[in-house]
Image 1 (cartoon, rainbow, N blue to C red):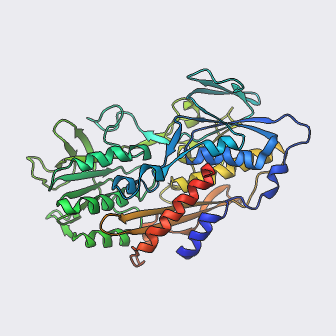
Image 2 (image 1 turned 60 degrees about the horizontal axis):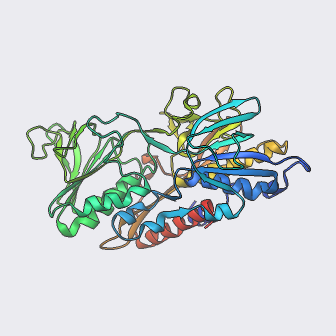
Image 3 (image 1 turned 90 degrees about the horizontal axis):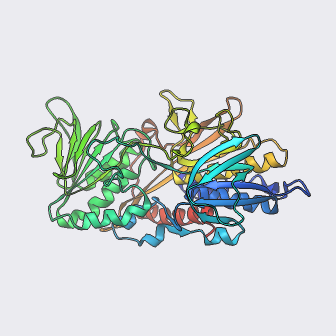
Length: 463
């Protein structure tokens, strides 16, 4: 599918638009089913919204959020560079509450299913009329840092800056970099939200700092750009960077403004001396090769599902295994608990093993699928079989000297024969599929990215 057509499709068409009768699914005369949604991000907000939109009076929907509002990491680079205010990526829950959803700030501390009821405990006693037993629970807690995964980092990962709410903190750090200073961004090799976002952030920051003659160093745990290589190489070249090679045949890009080092391992952080210790065979001006001094850094740590309150759902892994068609947990005894978004693991039948990319767009699609599955189950109907997930990403490459962006997408379809998700189009996460594709960085894509972001936020939060 062409990018322009896919953009229109992804921004405007609900993933389960083929299910218009769900709002009439309730058994006449039955008491409303109580459904709890945990997590107020893109996935949780969308799940609550569509449960109530489609379920109507057949369901009582409760949404537990950590904060009074949510700032998405989508397009947060524009906040970091001052191109847009934090309010552009922030939404509250007023529209959801107005639709009849019971929204509360609280923290879930435990979940246990007994028979057909899910028992939930909270850190603060719930407000009046908020039960502790539910017929169904949807968990969308997102993902966060693996504890103690980066030696030298603080317990709260002071250099992470990966949540949208941290955008202004990183902007403040950038604004305190001296002229000719250095900003380093470190990308882990495992899962994290928005697979292309760190690369977009590196170039957006480089554009923001270029007038001060600062340098941006990208330390990538992957052996190459995870996708869109031609776009990112073109971006490197636009900043004057060129491919270079060490005597030991290690290849990297270097130039006055941006340097890119693939296949890197971050061994430790020295916060006091402001040094990243890596395995790179490059000397950065210190006594030991691989030691990188910085004035500001964005160290993205290895990630796992934020399910410390329900570790049984992980079955010893980093993410929760779920039924591919409905997102119900596959862990024995938790059939009425559903896990969506970044916390869920959706394997793809590929070699080597891969999963559906973790992104805000995918989380919204997954929320609709899970909501539809629960409502159909309440009505005694089988789950829907025509299901798709779209993983769309727009990244602003320049937002200071100019407005330019890149675009990537991947489509996934549920394969009934194999009960799994399979790629159905696009190229996100598959470098080989873009090796012959011409670089496409433009102002049009930058503008489309803003429209897409606003449409996606409206889809999830109702405004």
